[in-house]
Image 1 (cartoon, helix red, strand yellow):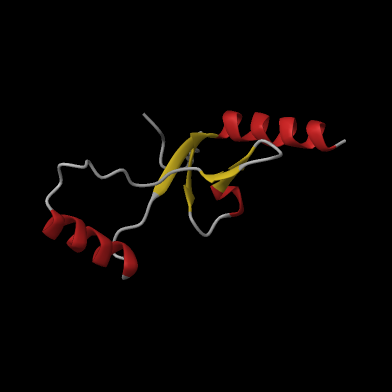
Image 2 (tube, rainbow, N blue to C red):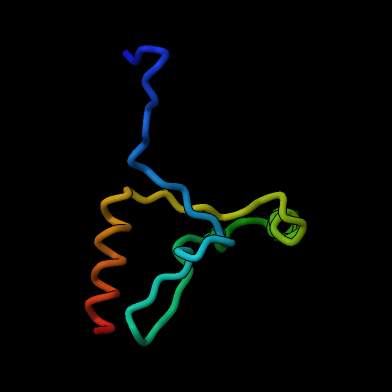
Length: 82
């Protein structure tokens, strides 16, 4: 339990499409950190509704990552560049 004067600091970070850390790369290939997967059995009318929600910004992909994983990722990218 935290005393009112203490601040809780989460070790989990939420990454959004507009963030610099959104794209993953291995030096050759870039890919988004998260996305949507719609089952092929999803009815077409629902797919159209989901597409409209995405297009209008009502439904957005986010990714969650531990701070330590993001730190190691940045360090490994730096090491591969130098």
